[in-house]
Structure formats: structure tokens, C-alpha cells
Image (cartoon, rainbow, N blue to C red; front, side, top):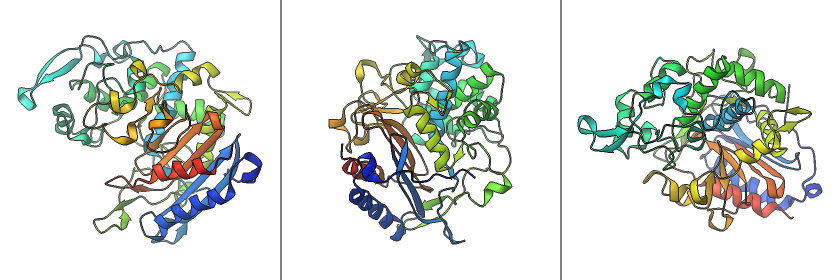
Length: 409
């Protein structure tokens, strides 16, 4: 069994053990106060894990502790994996960032965009430019999510049965066709709006590669990188290691809630949020990115492609708050942060909500999982738990601040 293990003393890699202990204590209070079930935290520098902490339970009722081999639903942390898969096809010349997606997915031909009104009175017009592959990867395609409740187009998503981003009972192909039947919220390339775009990208990978998304990712990413538990389903052997998913209550406690149905191969293969993985799997993926596309002699991407993936692609060097669709993205956490091809990228550390290194990149999942790679500090960090809060825990800024304080040089 592949287990993440501590490989170095913090002082060997320029980390402050006392600061890391303060970080552990801060996170442990969330567990001890009943706000988190448990967590795993790993900090590595130069590829060597120098701090690895587990605390609390992966299943409170069963009394099962968090261990280094615990499996987590990583939800939107699936998106960077899907983006790497698409970039592999770009490198092979089978796909281009400037391809109109309708060249591969004809349902997106003759796309229309919102002008005014709502419901039956909505006015739309033909798009001025088609959705390109790069628009999907940068979340500038004009697509949206049903849960925003802030625009007439996201209301159409709810009316179409896309409340959870999947057409009930459908597979990826049919769900993506349902997206295509709806108007865009804005002209492609003109705003950033976190959306169902990576599901469309996943379907694009299937069409171009001729393989189901789960098969492509397993054969081209998980097996080559040695990510043994990563995937879209949980086997009988893995089931005991899967963490229970929790939600918060009105009185500040947490309780189990339904999660992704992971027993058996899912009908809907979500490139946006369908994966499970362990800390070991995520560490391997981060290491491939930190090493600019290669790990242990296996190269998935050229160094220049990883550089392209992890730089800001928003026009004029804008950040997510300035270029983001309002009001959904007008929040302090988006200050100083741009977006690359499937990952957020720090472009102005002086304006970020928490101390961050210039060029640090990564992404998070709705169940309070997150990872980032800081090239300037040669640092990788992951934090894993299983809580879907209704409101922000404000945990990530504290996590980043306390990690920042632990870096000596």
C-alpha cells in the first residue's frame, strides 16, 4: 500500500518546527471544537515531506481515525487533473487551445449569449466569437453553475435540472449537450466565471482521445505517476478507508451528509469534481507539477507546457475579482489571484487575503480540501478533510498564513 510518509526534519529543508506546531494546534482546535471531523496536513519542500499531521476522525460514529491512507472526495481538485489531461492532448497535436469546441462537440455550434430579461422574456443574440478550448480551461467560456442564484442564466440551469451540474440519470455526453442548449451568461473571453466548463473539457477529452474520461486519466496519468488510489470509484478493498462526508448545522456542529456515489463506476464522469484520492496520490500529482511535468523518470508534460498552465491567462494581468462575473466573484479572497489553465495563480502577493508567494498555484474542493505549489519557495502543501460547509470556514487564509510563517528562507 502506498503511504505518504515524512521524509525530512523541518529544519533540514528550512522550515520552523515550532511554527508548524502552532499550525497543527490551530487546525486541531477546529476538530476539538466539533467544527471539523478530522484532517491531514502535509508540507513538503524540495519534494521531501517535512511535516505530516493527522488528527481527528475520518468517521466519527465508527470511531475511525484519519490515517495517511484515508481516501477523500476531492471534488474540484479534479479540475487540475482534467486540465493536465487536455494539455497532454495539446502536446500531441490532437487538440489546440484555440480550437473552437464546436469542432469537436457540434452541440456548441450556433451558441447564443444573454442580452436581457429572464425566463420566457429572456433576450439572447448569437455569440460574436465561439467558445475556444482555452476558454474552458480559464473559466471564461460564458458557462455558469446553477447554484449562484445571481443571474437569469443560472436560473435556466436550475430549470433544466442542472442544480448539481449533472442532468439527473445522465452520463457526461448527455449532460454536456444539456449545457449546450442553454445560452451563455456572457460573451466568451470577456469575464471569469467559475463554471461547468471543466465537465465540458472532460467530454472533449473523451471525444478527442476516443476513451472514457476515467480510462484516459487512469492510463495516462494515475498509473504512470504511481497514484494507486486515485479514480472515480471506490472498490470494496478501499471502502473502509473512505472518509465520511459531513456538513455543518445551524448550531455550529457537523453531521454526516450524502456524498458522491462512489461504489461502482459512475454513469456521470465529472471532470470538474468526480475524483477520490489519498494524500499520497495528491503528493505525486503536485510533485509532477513542481518538477515541471516529470516525476521519477516519467514525463507527462514538457516544462514549457507546465509553465503555460501555471501563469495568469486573464487579459491585461487582471485578477479574479477584477475580471470575475459579479456579484459571484466580488470577494476579498480573489484579490491578487489570477487564473491559469485549470489552476489559480498568485499574481500580486501584496493584495492577497493571506501571505502567498508570487506564482504560487493550486486549487481547492468543496469538501474543504486544498493544495498549492509555491515554485519560489520550492514548497508544496495539501490539506484534506471532508466538510461541505454552507458558509466559508475562513480556514484557508489561516492555513496559508501559518505555513508562510513556518518558511525560514
